[in-house]
Image (cartoon, rainbow, N blue to C red; front, side):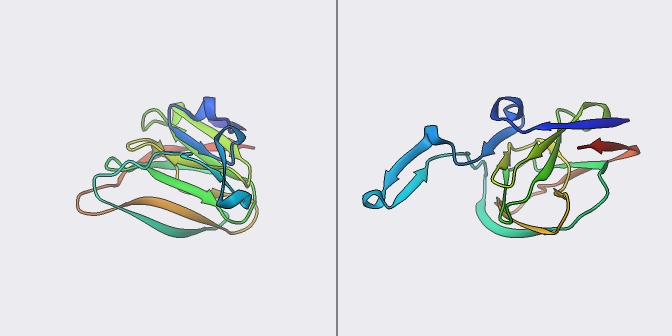
Length: 154
């Protein structure tokens, strides 16, 4: 089975979360005109502390052999290296419903709490990501593994 990556758009990604990008519709000039704030691009969902981390993604095969989800909070990824990358999400933990999105290097995503997704997928070089997620008590990671991996076509 193969899934083709589609271009990431806010409308197509809406069932899974929000796209994080400098949207001109959300631009507000602040600091006496020296800064543009792109306001409220995503909503953090959490029942505990919200933390910022940096994840360094390394190139891996473009196959999906597992999915994970974080039922107790959202998880946001914003690339820091400016390179294109991939997102794989699913409405259920099954290979046949996986969807792949090709993200530009200036686009991030915020997965809603409980959304099934593949771990970080970078395309050609290691890349750092600013990650916003939950830290606290409770089990906030579910994983499923597939008998047959799914290939991704970019």
